[in-house]
Each structure stands twice: as C-alpha cells, then as structure tokens.
Amino acid sequence: MTRGTAAALAALAVVTGSLAEATGAVAADGGMPYTRVEQLARGVTYGEFTTTASHGTVRGGVLTVDLRTPGVRVDLLTPGAVAARAAVSRLADARHALGAVNGDFFDISEAQHPGVVPTGASDGPEIAAGRALKAAVPSGQRFGPGLPPGTTAEDVLGVGTDRRARLDRLVLKGSVRTAHGNYSLGGYNQYALPDDGIGAYTHDWGAVSRRRAVCGSDTSRGAGCSTDTYEVVVRDGRVVSVADKPGAGAIPAGTTVLLGRDAGADALRGGPRRGPTGGLRVGDPVRVDERLAPTVSPSAYAFAIGGFPVLRDGQQLTGLDTRTAATRTAAGFGDRGRTVYLLALDGDAESDAGLTVAELAQLMRRIGAEAAVDLDGGGSSTLVTRAEGRRAATVRNHPSDGAERPVANAIGILTDG
Image 1 (spheres, rainbow, N blue to C red):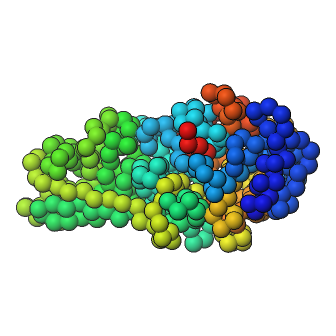
Image 2: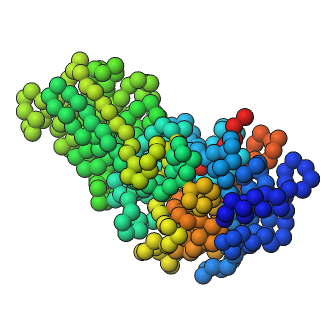
Image 3: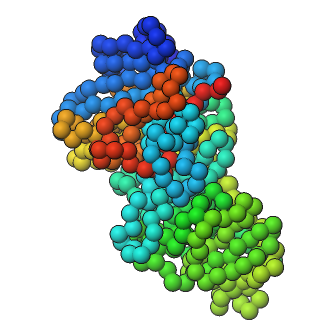
C-alpha cells in the first residue's frame, strides 16, 4: 500500500463521530478487498477482509501504520519482564496503544523436561523503546514451525531510529572479563543457552527459575538438562555469591547473574580445564558487557521483535510450508519501510480454515508488504484496537482458544500525547 493509498483509505473512513468507519469493498493497491475500514487515528487504519485459500474461507484484520505521520510509532509491548506473559489487550491497555497484535513464538510448554517450569519467554531478540531486553535462543531450541533455509532465530523485524522498518539479524556481542581471563557471552535473558555457553540475566528477566536455560541442546529442544552448571551473582562489578545450580527469584536492578553450562560452567567455576587459579570467587572483580549488533541497519533500533521471514524484497522465501493451514499472525512493511502492516487471522474454527505459511507470504504481499515475518499463531493470534475516548482495547478477531491466550510480547501502535 502506497502512502497515497493509505491516505485514501483514511479519507474514505472519515464519516461522522469520533471513530471513522466505512463499509463496502475497498481495494488496496496490492489487490486486497477490505470489507470494512476504520480510521483509528491520523496515519493509522484498521481493515477487515475475507478471502479464499487452499483450505477454505479465511477472515482477518490488518492494522496499517504510516510511520511518516508525526507522533505515530510502533513499539514492543511486554508484561514487564522477559519471562512473563499477559493477554494482548492487557499489554495494549498498559501502554494506551491504539492497536496491537501478538508477537513472537515463546516457551509455553516443557513436556519434554518434566519438573522444569516454562518461562514464557520468547524465541527471538527483543528491543523496546531503544533498549535491548534479550537475545535469541539457539535456532534448534525454538518453539514454532521450522525456519526457512538461510534464516535463524536471530532474525527480526524492527524499526530504526530513522523511522524505517527493516528485516535484520540481531547478533549478541558480549563478554565476561575477569582477572583470570575473558569469556564470550552466549546468552542474554534467554530461556535456552547454547551448548557450553555462559548467559547473563538481569532485572529484565523477571523472577522465573533459570533452570530451563541449561536444558536442550543446539540441535534438539528436547535434549536433557545439564547437571554441570554454575551460577555467579555480580553486583557493582564484584562477585557477591556463587552456586552450583541455576537459581530463581527477582534479580535486583544493577545485578547480573552469570549462568554457565558444561564448559561454560567449568570456566566460571575454575574446573580442570581452567587450572587451580581459574574461576570466580566471592569478591572477584567482573565486568559484563552485552549488546545486540545488527547486520543490516545503519541506525540503531527503536523497536525489534523476533520472527522468521516469509517475504523479502517482494519475493516469497523458498522452503515455506505449503501444506499445513493454521490461524496466523504476521508483521510486514512496504513503501521502503515507511508503512507497517500488522495482520491477524480470525480463529473461529466454524468459518475459518487458516493459511499455510506460503499463503501467508502471498497474502502479506497482496496487502502491500515488501517484506514480512511470521509471528506466533493458533491460539495466540490476537488483534486488538482501542476506540477514541475509550480506555480499554477491544479484541477484533476470534482467538481460536475461545479467549485471549497470555503471550510473551506484542507489537503495539502508539501515539504521542
């Protein structure tokens, strides 16, 4: 959808009252016939559609955001901790968002690891209001459909400080510097650490146990949990405590917990491979540095969320599933990053058959996206809007669980003032 089309839809939606609305088939430049269009604010519209796919009739909604509109932006909505979940409507209400859709796939079940508490944390990187909250889990530890060839759990859709949306990859760059040596950081506030890795956990993680971080492997989410672990608590640049097992409970602001598994535990503990002088003890000085490094963007990110790409440069990625239909959520952009599209399908099983991942890519291109990512679907798929003058958001689709599913994060549309 071009800027002119977005303006035309907004103008079409203007009728009497504070909430503008229009009904009837409204075709966007990409060929999507909207059966209903509402203007939520200047530069922000909501449209509903019905289309036919390989498995039957599909209904859904699309939020369109013109990032050139002063005071309008998208940002990550979170429950206040990485390892936590909340309904999309609650996340939207907390930030007074005009609209929102659910975000990335997340750690919802640990059936393969009995006794290990699910963290609720998402697969991919998170940046909210310009601040990095977490890095990506190893690709083999992801929840969600298999990744297309050439993509990883580090792939994101983000909006830079230049107010342009992009597909990118956010790679964790971090280190642990001690008097005995320096070690690479393999994780940052993530529910799964790489094999032999060291992870850093901060106040943003929340209070959930860090036990899940040492379960699974780089190639298998269901692999067993490591018994060779070591945890170090660092405050004000000094070690204040150590433990042989991952801990739980809120992490105070200004405190970092380092957790190692296998060779990573050996490095922190000072095991056989480190020699008698290695390892960290109470009182030792430690410096922990971490950042998420983009591989594409020339500017820093104001917002970023994990999701695997299905559309890039107007072309569907190879290897996308063409058989399994499901209720799906997606985010994308057009106009060279100036227009953002947030889509969620209706999950009413009696009338909606869902889309394959390949069909989702085609649909995003049809509404005007040049690039798009698949987000969590099924019972998580939720789209909400807030009418002008209302305090609470309204769910516009029918979540397939019959009610909103608590999720790890969401993409929200915010306005200044």
